[in-house]
Length: 295
Image (cartoon, rainbow, N blue to C red; front, top):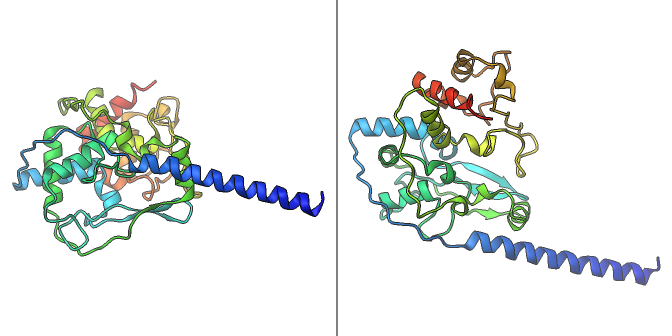
């Protein structure tokens, strides 16, 4: 190959790469900038101690709000990587850098159930496609609990989508990155089943417990396209996985102790079992009953 041919080939490659980059940025920006219309929510949020306690149980021990937003709800980094980008779970307290004074209960409800911010754009990595199933009573209780958080002054850095995230968005992969895309915003959420140790109640808890965020939609586990290099692949929770040989007692003991029946520890960095361990026996038995029905 002559020097001139090599220069031409390099120029063509650079032009193609630039065009591809522009296309990736453009396609990803279309998804990131899309606005969503959501019906107005009308909630009766009570701030009595019993409601706040229920909200803490649902929000902290089941829906894992604190896992992303921190024990004080002041926000935590979800990703800070030059390839993935920067994403912080926001400060939900009324302190500096937190929710503005005019942030209404309806705005919180829309963020939780619809995954949509006040600007109409989809929130990122907010598991609203799972939390949408939350009952009116549980949603109101969670909002009451969030409202009860003491103010924390914590201004979080602006988020941005890195090149790998933009490539995934442009390719139409990882739809859970933008949950508003996956939601029928006009459909009312289904009523919550009775709180009994039944598969129906277990399905409700698995849904609002955001188990499918890591274990995938079919709960069959496997690595995510944007998994970190050292992130262990979530296991298969169906009967074809390792849980197929467990008993109900094994399941309850694993979530209470953080160790599987064969002695393998659960990594709390990726599996927040200490929070799930605070669920009641009825709730955990319901989850187990539902998992046993999965194909």
